[in-house]
Image (cartoon, rainbow, N blue to C red; front, side, top):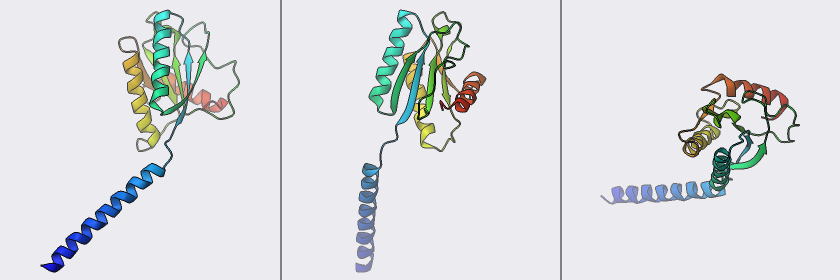
Length: 165
């Protein structure tokens, strides 16, 4: 009977030690922050307010290092970054709010990224960010990524070649 108690106590001590090591490892690991470029092509007051709200929420989450570019384009399907030199460090995400959400001709917000495996930490972050975008633009547009539509996929290929991603 004594041996059983010793084994139980030893097992509990091992579990306690394992839990404290795991807690220490989580505290000492740096939080992954993704670089996000938000490209705003919108022109109406309502859309501008939504984009501002989205930027504020994204900053507060702490998941992204946010940069914003307001771009003037003729159509939603024009390359918004064609005349701009890329930054020294590429972005993990380029989020394009197309001009067409103002008049309803486009119902998507293009979530442009490289392809990441579903098991990667970035993929989990993308899911959370996509949910935030869908909430802010509810009823107007929804986040669409490279796995769901060819348009963000073609932008991803183009931006990766140019050094944006």
